[in-house]
Length: 260
Image (cartoon, rainbow, N blue to C red; front, side, top):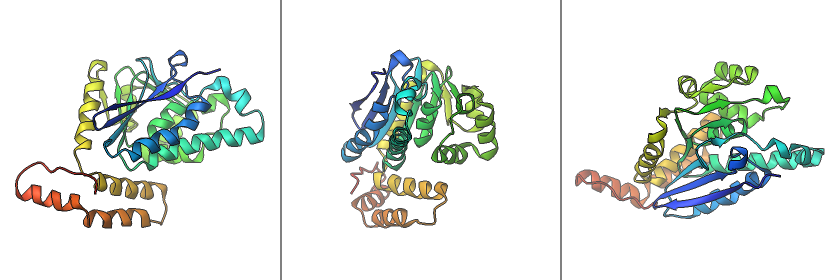
């Protein structure tokens, strides 16, 4: 059985979430799926944390997928399969709904459920040794509706069809070409690049970022309910951060935002 876990490391305003199951190339166990909502909620509640970074432990994999060794147990009954899928859905929703920017720092294998986790993040940066695939068609698994939505929203329906129908593996350059990742970095430069970007995001106005994230999520979900985003936009206009931003602009200095 898998012994993987999620580990949280705090580095100033950055909260790192490590997928820690190196013996199985950071395959995501049922326990890890179930842990995501509480881990993300704790980081959401920490006002000192301004940006989240998801990464795999070690240098071999971001995550090689869901832990298939557990499927016989977790999906052996209809009730078990529903509970397992509900845990996966809750994990993705927790990442996607976090009001804070979430970056996927990808090195090595990013396959199946690992790629699904990366697609739930806002931004994706990978090392040039990374490999990507969704092998559902080779396993006889039906890929979830929300996973389809995130994939189509990221790469478009034409590329999504190719990725899913062929179950083909793509290298880092191919992933960037189709829009799966924002940028490919040399292995030696990935950590520093993501750290610098996370600090850049952490210096910006958190209320503005939360409003934009809610609006983008609503638009890509195809919903007509924009009430949450509209509420967050109005909150920005009434915030201390908005006054600080205007004052800093006039005084030609860097603003100091506090999320209120």
